[in-house]
Length: 140
Image 1: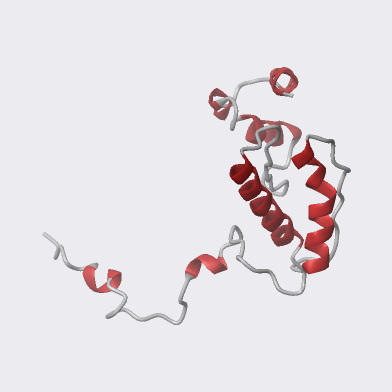
Image 2 (image 1 turned 30 degrees about the vertical axis):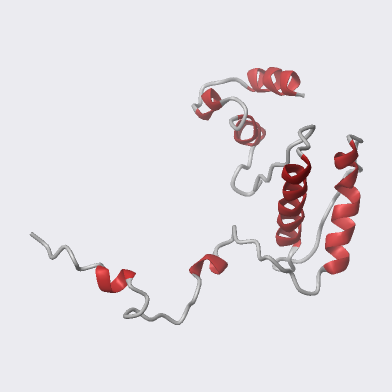
């Protein structure tokens, strides 16, 4: 039987030291509390989608640029902040979703990923795209 305390030293941060304080910051899903040098971009994104808070239709937004410049991070940051406002003021007329279209790279996968939040049975495959459109129409 292996020693039950084998992981105690690894878990206890006083005896186990690492070069990295927080490994979460290395995740592609990590959104920092503060984003440096992107104030104008964040304001532009927020201004474009802010009509949602007044139950109005926002303008479309197309963000492009070189890889690694912070496009996704800025969008996720704004989504995080607008969700905080939604909770604070109990706004329920919209929801925000992030879908990585490099991972979900077909119309079917994108629709399935989006709709499974509202219809858990859609997690399973086998539904036709017309079923997804029907559910999306009902949802909207």
